[in-house]
Amino acid sequence: MSSVIKIGKGRDKRIKSGHLWVFSNEIAGSLKGYKAGEIVDIYSYRNEFLGRGYINPSSLISVRILSYEKEEINREFFYRKITEAWRYRKRVYPDLDSYRLVFGESDFLPGLIIDKYEDYLSVQTLSLGMDVRLDMILAVLEDIFRPYGIVERNDAAVRRLEGLEERNGILRGSIKGNVAITENGLKFGVDILKGQKTGFFFDQRENRRAIGKYVKKDGRVLDCFCYSGAWSMYAAISGAGEVIGLDSSDDAIGLSEKNAE
Image 1 (cartoon, helix red, strand yellow):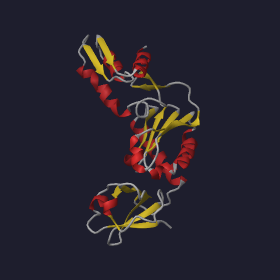
Image 2 (spheres, rainbow, N blue to C red):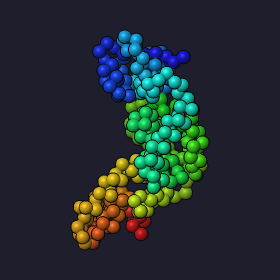
Image 3 (spheres, rainbow, N blue to C red):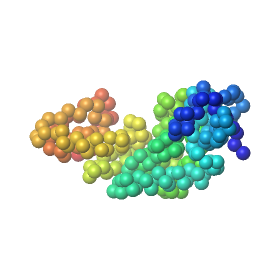
Image 4 (tube, rainbow, N blue to C red):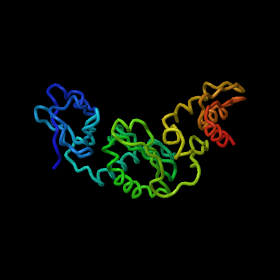
């Protein structure tokens, strides 16, 4: 049986409108006695069931909602939610094998980010409630995808707000060098262990493709903060006569040069 928290009078409107976070100042009563990461049921002051999620008494975001049903938050739950997210991506991106597989609240898995790089996975557990379930999540990912390797990119400062340390490394399998991915016919090498964020900015895919209409035939393009050179490559195939990539990181410049070959 899950523990219970109650929302103060007049403080449940945002939650009822669909927001998945419950802030500490919205909760009636003390948060003492709750175990960090445990599953709790959320009720309004009128005793209406509002949802089920995990709690972190030490965080400003005290509860993150996982479900609007009184269902078990177990291995089967994560298997179903991750599979649903995967099916959606395959429907939206039928020709891609690399994309953001799970995007936190957008997939009703707050605090969890999973990026798929061909046969490799990069995981971020940015909240305590997800971090304590990391082993379960990894087991589910291995079962569904059979990846060659899984890395954690938990070197994000936001974890400290949850009382978590920053970590980075290989969790399952092995990884040798950069991972090769293809986007809109272009091939890129991605450093999923030490690259920026989780290695590649998937959220800019459509913007990169759209740059073509702004590039003049044989024109000159300056790509500031070029990182992996993705924007530079798109500019080049769009007809630019010269593309200059600029970055303060030697590693980024080296990665861009390899991707341009």
